[in-house]
Image (cartoon, rainbow, N blue to C red):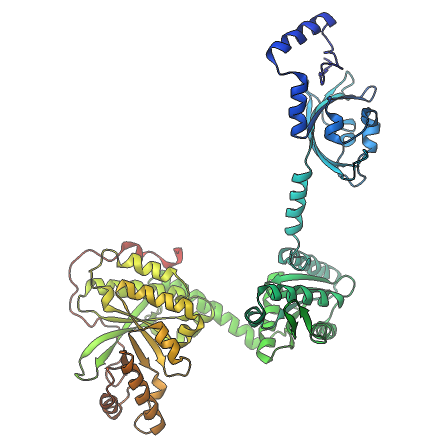
Length: 608
């Protein structure tokens, strides 16, 4: 078998099969065609690389002339053999040249065997207080016996890269603010603990600890103080852990705790320890002292829990129950037949809504809204109805609470927008009022869909659309709602504030929002004929709206007496089953023949 030799430095090493004369000739030619050796060494040194040639027969390593500069050593003698070089390597290394070359088990097929490893070198020089991480890339060649006989390669100093990799590895497992494990690692440990408990028939528990009123703290003290509080609450909780327990950052203001060997009786004691750790003393920040508190939800495992995902959901459910009972409290999840039945009902309802949306069984019902003076139809409110597979129709009141709870109301709003745009396109006389849920108001994609849907429609289509926003939605995020209304009006659409007078909207906020009309809350209208207090409130609301040049709509008009009172007050529009119930039948003549509304609007909503 051919023996391979490699020249590392022309001044110290010969090419094995060449004579000295031919070697000198080759060197002379190299002077004309290649950079000078010193120049090449400078280049290698500048990028932190050094070449080597290692003869395993006598364990001698020949180094490039820049080895001392790159490896920060005083003398090449300290790394002149494999044994000496190996003595400089950290004991914590997972791989070394000894493993990859000397003890290699691969077979050389005549072209050598490549290797690439990383390891840490200990400092040796007078200034060597910094350890070196190097990447060793090389190839070993076998001797006549098939075993590694010699190797050559390049060492590259990778301190900066290694530091970056270490940081990335750290942040992939730990939260930078608190120093505790992050959610991903916390869930991994919970899963491992859960499986161990199943195998050994032991118990554990998981707690979700929520820092109360973080939004208020942010507003009062600033985000820097909030971060300080989160970090200090984390430290306080950590001091109350037992050996083997694990604390992690679960989300922005929430921590998770995995409790080992913890049963139902123990979890209450643990939760009280964590509650008191936060509330016993105020937390000091750079901006001042803060009295913080936490609320806790927990679940015992396995205890009927089928998976870690289910455990997380149960702990969050327990936390929601604890928050409902008051800040600074603890609730442990308990299985309930009623709750399980409700959960199954929700899942079935969600599946039914999604299927109905996909199969376009969401229908539009039209309720007329009459002009107060003339009693003629001014426009129609679009009300959602769901047609079931058996042909029965479900009203919005039976469906919307579940849809809002399950986060599906946005899809319903998008479908209702599609149907409304189709009507505005097909019927020139159509004037429609469309309700929006609070979740939709704070999202910009609905407006984007409206913009896309209006393309290609008649120029007056937007002006024949009224969008209704509830008082609650309007004040939930005033900045967002103001921007939302401004964009709607820029399209030419009008905006109505629904449930006006329900007690949420201040006069200052109403002025800031600048709607076009207000819909007086039906609870103030339904007993108007017999309730003097309601008449006083409605009259005041009408006078206020008139002062701001806002049109008014009165809902829930149930008889002629109430209609007459509202007309006398000067209410612009009246709505109620007495004046006209919602009907699935189209209230206009045959549609005009023209190109359909934006064809993209008719796609399946679930693909959005």
